[in-house]
Amino acid sequence: MITFLKKILGVGPATNYAELMQQSAVIIDVRSPAEFKQGHIKGALNMPLNELEKLVSTIKKDSIVITCCASGMRSASAKNILKNSGYLKVYNGGSWSSLNNKI
Picture 1 (cartoon, helix red, strand yellow):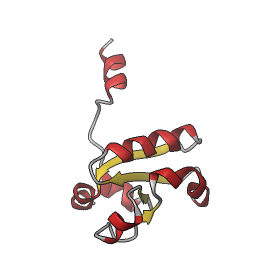
Picture 2 (picture 1 turned 90 degrees about the vertical axis):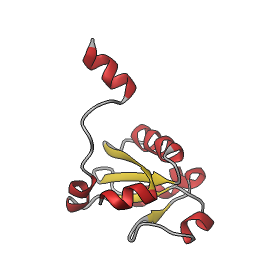
Picture 3 (picture 1 turned 30 degrees about the vertical axis):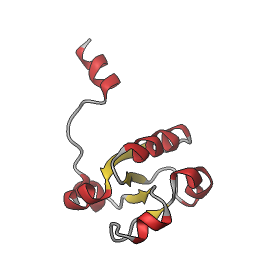
Picture 4 (picture 1 turned 180 degrees about the horizontal axis):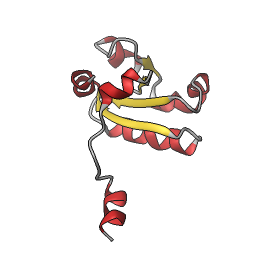
């Protein structure tokens, strides 16, 4: 029962984003191009959420993908879009500035 609740609520062990980066993770920043220009993680790909489904085909489905945005809301949506598109290793990194401190 507890495992079921944790799965529903998304509660589990903390993700080690630095380790994922050592495994060649791809960071997708789903903010607008204007937001991205104001600051972003070095090497991150800018794929605005409203264009994600058509742009993401450039990334292999077996890649490790970390999504980020300004607050974590759009990146959560992006994670769901990617999962529904067949990507298996997708992580919501939350805000890009917080993620930048974790990698």
